[in-house]
Amino acid sequence: MKNSSLSNWLYLSLLVVFWGSTFALTKYALVDFSPLWIVALRLSIGFLIIYSILKVRGESLPTGLENWAWLALVGLTAFFPFFLICWGTQYLDTNISGILFGIGPLFTVLAAHFLVPDEKLNMLKFFGIIVGFTGLYILLSEKPNTSIIPNDFKVLSQVAILLAAIGYSIQNIAVNVMPNISLMQKTSGSFLFASSFAFITALLLEGPPIIEIFDISFISVLLMGIFSTAMASMVMFNLTKIAGPTFVSLTHYILPVYVVILGSFLLNEEVHLYQIIGMFVILAGIVITRIGSQKLAN
Image (cartoon, rainbow, N blue to C red; front, side, top):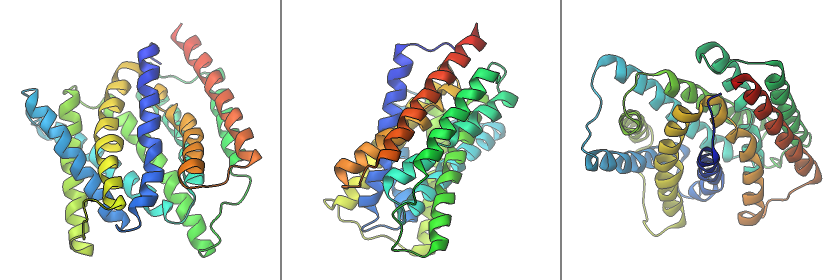
């Protein structure tokens, strides 16, 4: 892992807030919008913000087939996780969704071991990941509150969140190894592809949405577009470059804690003892992983 500083941890905390808030905001947005339109709108809002910043900085969209091939991959790894989270959150409490999302580091660390030269795995680092996974297992030791839907959807909604976590991990690696264009070009280019793909798909499959700009559903989508999409992506791309994908993957450990707390306050979801125990085990995994990464750097 690359050297990290206090500023990197502050960026990481922002990512947790931006991404973690998505689960609660999605619950509000689903009242009036389908999962597909939530994704299309938040990506379009995110692109407009990023592209505006790009032009103010005097930059242009990247050129070249290789760049756009990578940007298409990054864009798809934005669209599909967004959609899977929206779809799965329809049938799960947000705290369970956030917990399941924490599986990401397992994939990120293993993939980074093969794809990123200075992100090699050692025994202590691996042990920290296992401890973190044990915390997730504890958090999943009780059945989620999904009694209002068939059993098939219980499983599919959980699988959707897990696949979203893996999708973000793929994006994390891709951003780190793609050609060295600027941060704003990476963000604006990938969002142009993702928002176009999402908007056209939503329009063809579902027709135009009904939007009330002062409705809580649209306000939730707007907040997701600004913070959970545009701002989060800029922070994530920059942090991946300066601190490495494994450091960014720590958000998957901290995020469940934030989501459970937020869900209990905003959505009145119950917090149980097994969830609290699981959180402490996850935090222990973070500490062990960090120690292993520091030993690797030395």
